[in-house]
Image (cartoon, rainbow, N blue to C red):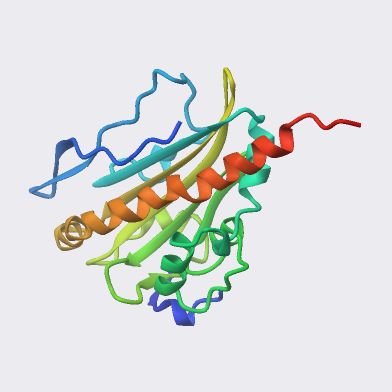
Length: 227
């Protein structure tokens, strides 16, 4: 199992945050997660079983952006979005993880430390983060293999699952981003609750910046060209 370290030592349709809470019991602590996204727009489910990696999050966010492009075109467009393209989110990420270049794409970001690539497919990928996300610079672990993510149990830490995928819809496709956070123990769960306002604002930027940019690029690329 990987050991905790700071990032400096690592190699380097929009669904807004729903403030209606669903109480759940977690180690004697009443925690919450946003209400499940409205599935009436699409009956599709993630192309991979997220519950297999993190079944009972204490907090979950889900954002979605639709496009007239195909799922493949949308996913390819998403791979072109770089940190420098997102004026606010890009700067926040670089501030939290020192050493990242502005030219780094989000696709590359989730494949390098302190993130751990867990699984990927033609139009999806899953990345995990283990450690203490509430410290100023963060204390994260680099895992030697994906299976260590599910077994992670260091006291006072969390596991964070970052899932991204493109799915087909009746009018084209949709790009979806879902983040799940699981606390190892009660202490970590309290820290997560304290971070609630920051996480809400941070995840809100995902919908307004990278997802929007990707959808716009995919729509532009799919437009018929005059010869």
